[in-house]
Image (tube, rainbow, N blue to C red):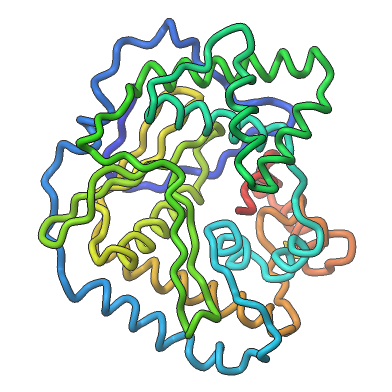
Length: 351
Ligand code: SF4
């Protein structure tokens, strides 16, 4: 397993096709025995907790949102700020609005990610393997009873596959699961592992909620030394927004518990790589700025304001493109400029 500690350069946005070509899965037999992921995540100096930090960040967010929320009509429902809408609205408000009226359907790649997530949870909490005659059986059973609409849609999508398509998906899930099993054992209770840890933080009297669901949290929040580590699990390739997602989660944890996580990490089940980053005050303050910017935009959209159209590299995959002059102009300009052509596969990066 390759572990990258505190990389300076952001991962580049993937530019390879993803819809027709599933992520490459390394053969588990070719991987040498890894050191304990748990040890590598936890073996570093833990910074002291600044007891005033979380309160200061919360006050900052409250102050910046107050005016925008005061202008929201009472009939406007609560504005929920999760990692996906945050990334999307900072790219283009018009696209974000379009996604609300026409949500992205569950794709094969989304289904793969959900199934692998379940396999990961089974491994780290119970040491249960999904290997067997039908690698999809256990994950599908778990998704069927989760109570989440999106999970039901995944189950329905798998049920709609042909036998050949289902077999291909099962092979892929088994390969990802084998890599998970190679790198993760059942986690000891002493580390207090929590999976699917849901965080909902109200702001502005409950009119705004910052929300997230952590794939895995290790360690109990402590008042003196940062002691929590958050891990996100990805079945796809590295994407630039994964780093910002983790920073958002670090902020949620800081606001929730009063102490920042000392590390955040993304585990890639396609190859077993683990990107690890230490969390500093600078990262948290930059994330607050990003969250305030995005939340103000989401509030404006919720209030019915005309959305801004901000051309960006993902315009070619936007459902609004046919009626969006700035988007069309941007694409034409990129096609004329050498080296600035559209990046196939970037449609998966809307957040
Ligand atoms: S085409 Fe581009 S600019 Fe237009 S709405 Fe979509 S993302 Fe925004």
